[in-house]
Length: 356
Length: 119
Image (tube, rainbow over all chains, first blue to last red; front, side):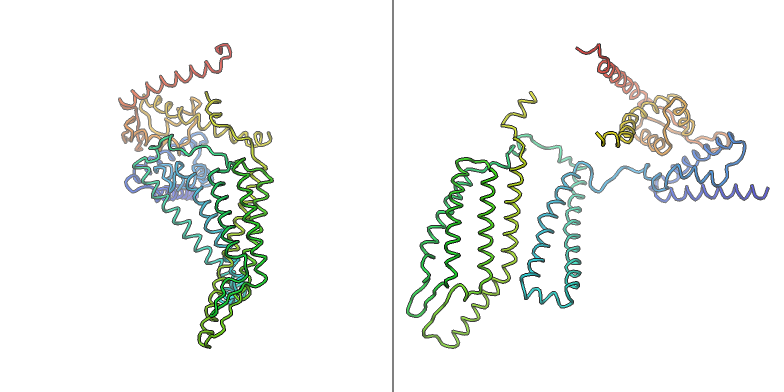
């Protein structure tokens, strides 16, 4: 008898604990009402089972019954209005923006850091005092805080947009006429090709006029002469300008990328990037020699300071030059991949004709 | 092909849930043409082949009441307080319209599924 009373009080306690836990997650105004109804439903179910079995349910059976109902917060959740930080309407745009942020902000961040650490000795000296592991840990920490701020900002903006959208329904106001035109990514703009021809030819003219002679300045008080190594840069950049101009002429005539032309673009860009990187490896006095016959020691010191400043600026700029080169080459390589895997694009009006 | 067979049962369950969702509202409204409390309503629906778990039923009843389609009242029965629901006049109107819509959908489906009905 005693054991039966104890079991009954235990099952009642289990029920009370369950209802109390559900109550915690409910809005205050509805707590009493919902709990009263839920409690009634549970008691009706228990009563029915007990009638069927001809005995009281034990603690394990009650436990199984409650488990089947679900976790308290999930039960309570069904009574709450469905809310989300970013709803299904905005979520695809949110995901897209997140990807863009990751690609255009975090990836360059990592690449610049790698470039600075590998190529910029003063930057490396500043950050490597605790060893390479320490430098990586510190960069990792900085990357996470940068990533957190960037992604949290995007999330916050979208959460606000979600609230504004719920009130103003701004997404419903749109015009099909304002949709971007269908474009073939392998199409080359003729205007772009024309500009490319002009720019390359103007550059070639300017380059020949100013840089063909190794003597840049020849006055009695100062003489600036380019070192022999400059000839490689002169001929290299000149050749590239003519190849690029010829390439642009062909693109103008046939304004769709093909694998050979995309490959030529990759080769010319790789050569230009290589030349730039090579040029940045030279100190100022490695590219040009300055002769000043009558120079005071103070002026000489000033000249040296200026040369050092230019060298330092070039050393600091090198990782960015390298990064730009890498990005350009990646774009070029992707273009080849895209052209190789291109499916024939529908011609203008083909989709609408198929629909009709 | 493999994907189709692997995800088959889960896809079917989800589609069945979607199909049932709208039908359950009509069934609940129709059952509440006569007054009932939650537990007996759930049993009645299950007995007629439309089992619905309490986690879905009670929030649905509240929503329908907030929309003015149901009215409810706490009353004592068998020495226990129970909340009785019944269809409101507005709910009755909506139910009739829903039933008409249901018939239209059914007729359309019959036409689509009946091969002889096709041109």
